[in-house]
Length: 532
Ligand SMILES: CC(=O)SCCNC(=O)CCNC(=O)[C@H](O)C(C)(C)COP(=O)(O)OP(=O)(O)OC[C@H]1O[C@@H](n2cnc3c(N)ncnc32)[C@H](O)[C@@H]1OP(=O)(O)O
Ligand SMILES: CC(C)C(=O)C(=O)O
Ligand SMILES: [Mg+2]
Image (cartoon, rainbow, N blue to C red):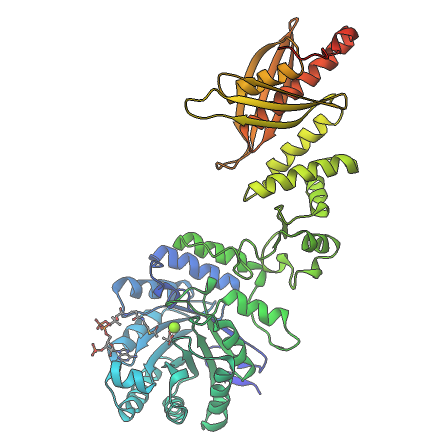
């Protein structure tokens, strides 16, 4: 049945009003205070996102909060969202909210008063009758100044249901147009929330004329589930915040509620004005403003929300993304999903990554060799970057036709020790091993190569570069030889700088052999007897 609302006009029964409290409850998260300019930027983004109500602050809290509410109200003096300000059940609070929200085209005064026995006795030190009187007078006062008045029963979910019914009835009689029942301390289960709203809607006279609203906290991780349960029990206003920020463990996260409604229309057949493709942008703006990123596994907007690392999932996603994605990344503002290469990845994702990096198709053998090395790196590194993959594939491609291959290397080094390298090469298919000492681990390794494969060449350059950041980054080593005025370069990469050096040396050696072969084929055969 449609409801006539002072701010929204005729509201069809399947319409969900999104009340955003990022700038009020969200700002109550320790360390999340925002200045005026930041609040204005956030308010603009929330309006673009399509929220229906922006709770811009608690006008009496401070002059800064008052200014923020007023500036946001001025910003939406023509059209745009309803602008609300929170007030206690005090005349001064209400009048500050009235004054601050007045410039808005559609102002709302929001009044809160606790209704649980615990809060009334311990915090407010008020009797039930006093609370009822306070509801009647505060809502009545607000209604004298604003058409749109929301009344909230703080700790409503832990309140005696009979008394709560009386409170809600009093608020409706006094002129409240929205009745909000918060689960202030995040204590409830979805069935509890549904039961409360069903009872209120069935028992309170006049309930059919107002919008019921849910405001759930996340202390037990139930905020979104409770919000959806409330919607199924007849609630049509949802109070939530971007990234789920808010007092203690936060509020229901707007992006999660919005996408649950969109993705599960089969069981939640409702409409809202949320432009879901703006969810990620809004989330990122808030993170930038507050300096707090969402956790990577945060639904919808977390870095991993559409990322797949394990081979079986990646293979499925490559065949058809719907195997592991219940919504498209584009629908919430990501440009694409991501297949993250890691130790759980398989060949399908690895091959796909090579295509994405622009490599032409490589043969199965090369792919398998590169994949083996990739798994080896992934076991050692937390993150395998594109640059890592490119480096190891380049390495494999470069080495595909090598006559000399590095197959083993062990280096013993340390303080007051002469570094010693034990090295195994495969030369024309035959394995040979040798050992050498040197001035440092790299020198010992190069000496060992010369020992296993005797040759004379001038080493002109040895350079090490880090491919990515971090101490587990791959090193890319370049080695340059000079022979008869001609230069050859070799490259090698590995998370171990010594192994990368050996690879680079052996690579340069192979290129040198090819060069020599072109000029004097006889010289290419290494001595069968390693030099002493
Ligand atoms: C569940 C919620 O999120 S409610 C919103 C919570 N947000 C905030 O509190 C942020 C803004 N708050 C503030 O800036 C301050 O607390 C102010 C300006 C509102 C009040 O500051 P103070 O006057 O110094 O009071 P203080 O914060 O110490 O204590 C709160 C007082 O309000 C009373 N109070 C609490 N809730 C209500 C209410 N809904 N209606 C009327 N009085 C209330 C308390 O009983 C207490 O009164 P007392 O001093 O007579 O014991
Ligand atoms: C002010 C009210 C709505 C509140 O934030 C709560 O009870 O959690
Ligand atoms: Mg709250």
